[in-house]
Structure formats: structure tokens, C-alpha cells
Amino acid sequence: EADIYQTPRYLVIGTGKKITLECSQTMGHDKMYWYQQDPGMELHLIHYSYGVNSTEKGDLSSESTVSRIRTEHFPLTLESARPSHTSQYLCASSESLERGRSEKLFFGSGTQLSVL
Amino acid sequence: GNSVTQMEGPVTLSEEAFLTINCTYTATGYPSLFWYVQYPGEGLQLLLKATKADDKGSNKGFEATYRKETTSFHLEKGSVQVSDSAVYFCALSTFYNTDKLIFGTGTRLQVFP
Image (cartoon, rainbow over all chains, first blue to last red; front, side, top):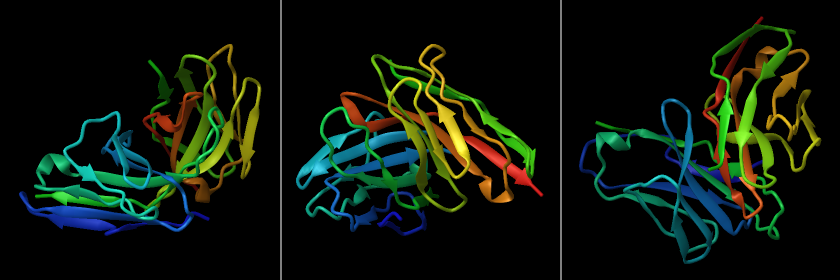
């Protein structure tokens, strides 16, 4: 059973607002990720972290930023939301394994963001 | 580059019908292959995986065999249930990027009683 939580579940907000999407996991995983899921359901990696104070951009360019001050917490922030940011955002985590060993990702339930 | 191609949905079936969702991949080297499932209102969950050629992953009655010769990892189930209605994602990871999954576009399955 996954122990990774995202809040809020749904967020409707006006253009220009600053928002933070929360993600927490209680599994002690070093690695955490943010995926953006478009209406066509395709998933794109936008940020990832391999541990405290480590953050990297993913394959899809995003105007959002992330921070990793604590192992269990990986929030995503949009300084000024726009309608183009409307999407489903999924947070995930995995434990570190030695190179070459495939890893299982645990996903949160997602945040559906709508920017008006 | 590395990529995953899934059959488009939705796939609509009656209960107890046979299910196949096609997945093919392009990758350098020997990727690991996965099927994830997303039930309504939930995040993705790992359904099954295979890490080398000819491996068969199985879980909850679902199976998929890693076919290197056809670069495929088709998902099958002999008798679907209404509770199997969900979106199914095929994905791969490579040896040097074991945590960076590359997902297909997802296939929605709808099972009717």
C-alpha cells in the first residue's frame, strides 16, 4: 500500500495566483518525482529529486519549481498560474537501488489544477 | 530515442471477455518493462513488470511477456471484471535511468456487466 499523499486533490484558481502543490511520503524514499498528466493521459516527468537539497528538471520543460528540504516532503510551486498550467499533477517516490535494478514507483492520487 | 506505443482506447468489453492491450517499445539496450494501472480518482499503481527477455510478469490475473524479437509487452487477461475498468499505462526504464520511466499514452478499459 502506497504511503504518498498529495494535497489538495482539486484546485481551481485565478490567473496570476501563486500556488503550491503538496506531496509527502512516509516510506523514507530518497527519490521523488513530479509528473504532469495532460488530458490525453500522457505522463511527462517535470521534476525529480534524489534526496535532500537535490532537485533536477525533467524531460518536459515546466515553469514550476520544486524544493526538497526534508526527505518526506517535495512541494511544487507555480509563482504565477496561467490557464496553460491546467493539468493533473502526479507525485511519485521510489527507493534507491543499485544501478541497473528496476525500480517501483509509488504514486500519489494527484492534484487536478484548473487555472481560470 | 526511447519510446512506448500503446493501442488507443477506449477498449470496451463485456464482463468475462478476453483482454489484450498492445504495447510496443523502442529502446537502446535492454529495458525493463512495466504495466501501471490508474483506477478512477487514484494515482498509478504498478500492475506487473518484466526485466529481461522472455520474462513473464503477472498479477491479479493479468499477464505480459517481454518479447525482444517483436519489441512488445502486450497485456492480457483471460476474463475481465467490471472492477478492472481503469486506464492502463505501458512503460519502460533503461539500465542507466532505472527510475525515469517513459510512459505510453495510456489505454482506457471499460468493462460492462
